[in-house]
Amino acid sequence: MTANLPNVDLNQTVCAIATPRGRGGLGVVRLSGPRAIAIADRIFRGQTKLSDAAGYTVHHGLVVDTDSNVEIDEVIATVFRSPKSFSGEDLVEFSAHGGPVILDRILHIMTANGANLAGPGEFTLRAFLNGRIDLTEAEAVADLISAKTDESAAAALKQLQGLLLEEVNEMRSRLLHVLARLEIDVDFTEENIEESEMSDLGTQLDELSNRIGQLLGGYQRGRILRDGFTVVLAGPPNAGKSTLFNRLARDERAIVTEIPGTTRDILREYINLNGWPVCIVDTAGMRETIDIVERIGVERTTAAVGAADGVIWLIDPSADWTKQLPVNEIMEADIPTIVCLNKSDLVPDADSLIRQIQTDIQAHKTNGEIRFIAMSAKTGEELESLLGVVSEWIARLGIDSHEAEIAINERHRAALVSAQSSLASARSTLNSGGESELVAFDVQAAATSLGEIIGETTTDQVLGEIFGNFCIGK
Ligand SMILES: Nc1nc2c(ncn2[C@@H]2O[C@H](COP(=O)(O)OP(=O)(O)OP(=O)(O)O)[C@@H](O)[C@H]2O)c(=O)[nH]1
Ligand SMILES: [Mg+2]
Image (cartoon, rainbow, N blue to C red; front, side, top):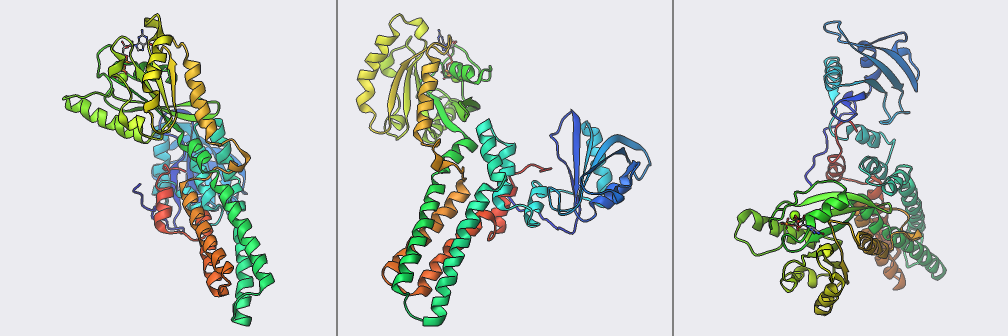
C-alpha cells in the first residue's frame, strides 16, 4: 500500500463531488471548512441567505457562476454548522442534477470563490482531526461504503456507531487506572509492590488480557466480512473452471470455449453465500506450456492458490483423469480442497468414477481436508452440494460465535497483539515480585498500543494508509 496523507490545512475550505462519476438523478457537491458557508452564500441565490441559515436546514435556490452571472442549476442546499456536521466543520451540501458537466461547473465556481479541491477521504480525515470521530469510525466509513453483503454492512455500521471505540476506551481507562496505582507505589515506597495489591493488579491485567483475546477472536470474521472468503477454481485446461465461475457469478463474465488454455488472466467475482461474501477466482488451466502468455497465467494461478481460503479443483472426465490430479501446491498445503469431477452430464458413471479418483488421491493430501463431488457446471447439477461444502468451511472458522462479535481488521489485530504481549510482560514482572516501575512501563506500552487503534497515538504513515484508500468526496 503506497499512500500519502492528503495535505490537510484545516484553515482552508475544501470541496468535492461526493457522488459517483456519471449521470444520475442527483449529484452532491460538498463544501467544508471555516469559509464553507460564506462561499456557499456567494454562489447561491435563494429566498434565504445561507449565511443566515441555521444548521440542519435545507434551502431551495440556484447556483450562479459568480464571474459571468450565469445560472448553472437549480439545487437544494443543506447547511450544517460546526460541530454538528460530518466533518465537524461548517459544511454545505448542494444537491444538484446529477450530470458531470453541472457538477464540475459547480466545483469550479466553488474553487473560483476560494475553496480548494479536497483530497481522497479528506472530509473523513477532517472529521478525525477535528475529534468528531476516532480512527475506527473513520475506517468504518470506508468499510460501510465498500460492504459486499448485508452482514458486512451491519458489522461496519456497528463500528461506525463506536462499538470498538467504546471497547478500547474502556480497556484503556482500566489500564490508566492500574498505572495510577503503580505510580503511587513508585512515588511513596520506591520498593516492590505489596502482596495484596499485587494479586489485585494481577487479576486486572488477566481480565484485560482475556478481553483482548476475545477481540482478537473477531479477526477472522472481520477479514471475511471485508475481503470475502476466497475460493480459487483451479485444474487442468478445459475442465470447466470458467463455466463454473460464470454460473456462480450468474453472469457470462469469463470467456468459455472448447479450446484448452482459454483463460489467462485471473478473474474475481464476489457472491453472497448466506450473508458471507465469497470471492470466486477463475484461473488459467494448470499445464506445462511454452506459450509465454499462458505460462504467466499459470504462475498467477499458483500464486492465487497459495493465497486461497479454499480450492475447487476441477477434472474433465472426457480426458484421462489420472493426468489431471491436483498439483503438489494443493496436496501439500493446509488449504481445504474439493476435487470436482465436472461434466457429470457427459459420463454415465460419474459417481463411480469420482469414487475411484477419491480412492486414488485421498491418502496423498498430507495437509488440510479434501472432499470429492461429481457435478456439472453446465447443467448446475450438484452445485448446491458444492456450495454446501464452502459454507461448512466458512462455518468452521467459528466466525458466527458471540466471541467474534466485533469484526476487527488487520491494523487493529496488530495493535491488540502488541498490547497483549506488553500485558504478558507486565504480568511476568509482577509474578516475580518485580519493581512497580517496570510493570508500569509495560502497562503504559499496552495503553499506547490500544491508543493506536482509535488514533490517540498515530503516525502520518498510518493515516496515509487509511485515508489514501478513500475516494475523493468521502
Ligand atoms: N457437457 C459439459 N460441458 C462443459 C461443462 N463445463 C464446461 N464444459 C465445456 O467445456 C469446455 C471448456 O470449458 P471452460 O469453462 O472454458 O474450461 P476452463 O477450465 O475454463 O478452460 P481453460 O480456461 O482453457 O483452462 C467448454 O466447451 C464448455 O462448454 C459441463 O459441466 N458439461
Ligand atoms: Mg477458463
